Image 1 (cartoon, helix red, strand yellow):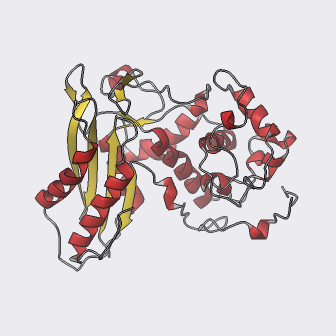
Image 2 (spheres, helix red, strand yellow; image 1 turned 30 degrees about the horizontal axis):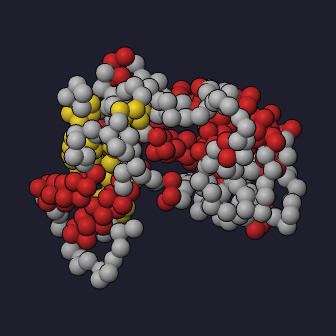
Image 3 (cartoon, helix red, strand yellow; image 1 turned 120 degrees about the horizontal axis):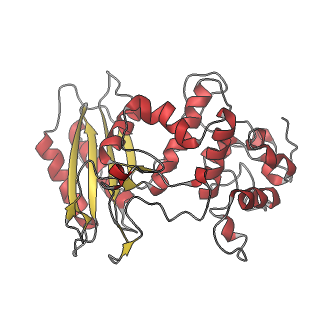
Length: 349
């Protein structure tokens, strides 16, 4: 499906996605998709050198303290993968009112970390030759072929947050009341007009809306619900039994209570209420530290000729600096494992 160039934007000017074309062996998505609680890095330390588990725990604990609330309204779970082994460190409360402590099997709402499952499914599909990064999203979500600028948006742009689409539809439609149904969602996309600050392929714009659209495109391509695709292609093969869009009663019993920045309990454990989209494919994804450690390990690849270190940080209290803390831990461990002195003036952010 060829798309017309508009306002001087031509396909050969669109930025690359660091990914091979159709039929090649792998796909790499931008690091900004590894957000908030899911961080990984590769290092190459001298042969035979390894930090002890006790050293790891001391490093993690020292940095995580700033994420822990004084009133026990929330906590932090950490899964660390280093030297081919996984270690778990848990702090604080899963539910302060019920005095339940966080464990490695506590189940968290992944929030934006859940975007990794859609991009991973796309990566797998591209690797298998089932989809292409330069495919227009309207090729799969055919209702969008009636729209305007949305017809220029590709799967690669959606996955790399360069689609030009806004973070939420409500940024444009301040008049809209209530949540968006699927027909509302499609209508908005068909009516969306790109302006000079929102050109497909030209700007980095973080978009929750775009990632829901990617899920929908995956559903349409394979004629299966997104939750089924996740289970068949990711969580099932990896044995991630605590990861789902909709939790069973047994899983909900392990779900953490969410808290606001000031410690006020928000919502019910195991029920996603933060999305402003009211249709199945837009649901929240839940998982445990143990499951996310498996997902992390699979993504790291565990090559035989280089050591790697990766970390998952999950927390149940809003607006905490998990990204910065995760980077600090990774950099400190990477330097220690490589026996390198810290760079003078280095800034973890």
